Length: 200
Image 1 (tube, rainbow, N blue to C red):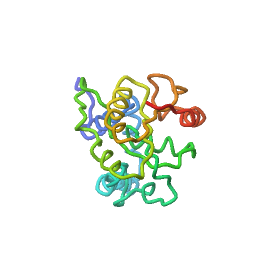
Image 2 (cartoon, rainbow, N blue to C red; image 1 turned 180 degrees about the vertical axis):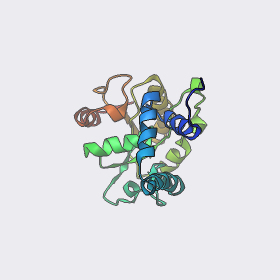
Image 3 (tube, helix red, strand yellow; image 1 turned 30 degrees about the vertical axis):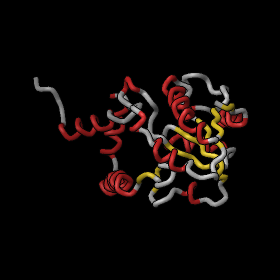
């Protein structure tokens, strides 16, 4: 007896399975949900993905995601430009912004040093960060990476580049457990970590 399959449905399920955190069962459920949409809704959904891909790019200052030349944080004149908070990816900016504790600017590396996984210093946005430090405006750089081996290695690597410039380099306090992912850290712990940050 031939096995039941629909090629287009299988391809849709495969695409959902490629998303982080989505297993086969979730991918099947999402695929069937998409199929239950009206055609106009499905087109809007597909258009929003294409539109995001076309319009969203890196901010020319901090490398965060934006649909303008400069993101809204870098464009905000009320931000304290003497402090730059360095994070792994754009999700971390959102996490810190939720705390409403940090009125600084950010710099997004888009990764962490991990030679075993092929992520070397030239693959991170370190050049752009160092360019931002070529003035007397920045007084402190906060290393706000995940508490992992890769996060620690990246913090140490960057601090060795930055400290000779006479800029204070701090890291988050260890209220954040080692191995923790910042985006799953609650606002109170994150705020406390910011407040009790230590110099590297």
